[in-house]
Amino acid sequence: MPDAIILGIESSCDETGAAVVRSGEEILSNVVASQISTHAPYGGVVPELASREHLRAIVPVVRQALADAGQTYNSVDALAVTQGPGLAGALLVGISFAKALSYALSKPLIAVNHLEGHVHAVLLEQRQSDKNELEFPVLALVVSGGHTHLYLAEERENLWTYAEIGHTRDDAAGEAFDKVAKLLGLGYPGGPIIDRLAPHGDPYAVKFQIAQMKHRDRRESSRHEGAPAREPANARPRFDFSYSGIKTAVLRYVETENLAPSIEARRQALAEIGKKHGDSKPAQPTLDDYLRLSDRQTLNLVASFQRAMVSDLVAKTLAAAREYDVRTLFVSGGVAANSELRSTFQHESELQGLPVFFPSRSLSTDNAAMIAAAAFPKFLRREFAPMDFSAEAGMRLR
Image 1 (cartoon, rainbow, N blue to C red):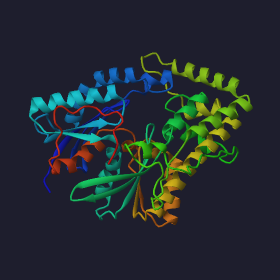
Image 2: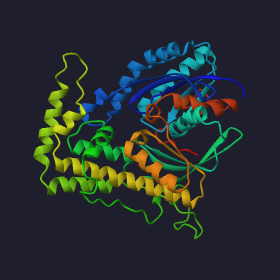
Image 3: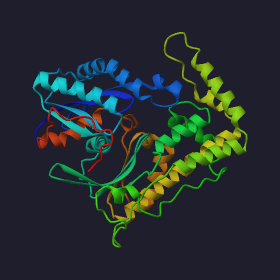
Image 4: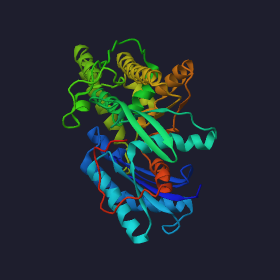
């Protein structure tokens, strides 16, 4: 197999990333510029601000990645960039920069699906730590702030193919975490904060029911003109997710229990902590700060919410694994960094006799190393992007 050094660029949402990866498995550098402090005052990602921050960061981030790897623009063999899905304006920053580099350097350019990148984040480290061949089919759960998808993955002669067997009908899992944290005045990004607070509450104190999908997504039967309204009797089942309901249930609990005054007090106190720094970078509240500002009822609510989310993600994924007789399970994306999700998957998968792999936490969130790794099979097949390709905000993985 030929050796190839690929410079990857990632700008799909609010992380500007650049990385240099050798042959899809050796990370030579991986640099990420976070925009958390930019978006935190708004409680979520503001697309216009994200694009502006990408424009500011992309040149220094790429230069730093090359320097850390001991490489130059001329020494890399190819460039790779995220084409989608993501925020259109953010994607275009990375794509425009990658196109300019490709043209100026006469280097091939590879367009990568962000979701496939998350799958290859697992593969990248799995190849390093375990030289045994993967057993197929692989079931990949990609779960993040913008995505909750289940894919059956196969690989033949460096060609990876994906069949989607489940997705969220509304909110992604990470989006639900962030919205609940915002509702409770815990700040942004909410997922890591909830993960840190949940062990301090009773996960059975509040009963949450998550919607169970009993019918096919209408979008599935209407994607193609003339598609039948009903699925054939022998159609394999789907395992879709829905998290708007639990978000609403948390809101109703807050209203019923009259938690609004304490939430507002917590929000203001955390904002004051953020103003204490004299420099331009706001101070970050510590776990002790969050615990001091959260009463027992709030901690129980957070723990119960996380338990319900984790239970649903694990139960549906393992049910899909049984239905499709998969041999290996991947769990990737930003929510894959959640401690309870990891431990529950490891325990339940072991009971099912199913090996489960996660990326390290640094590769769970958006990064360019996974983009460069996903580009390597395409490099071997010489699947290069034409210079007129553009961003696809709603890009699907096939």
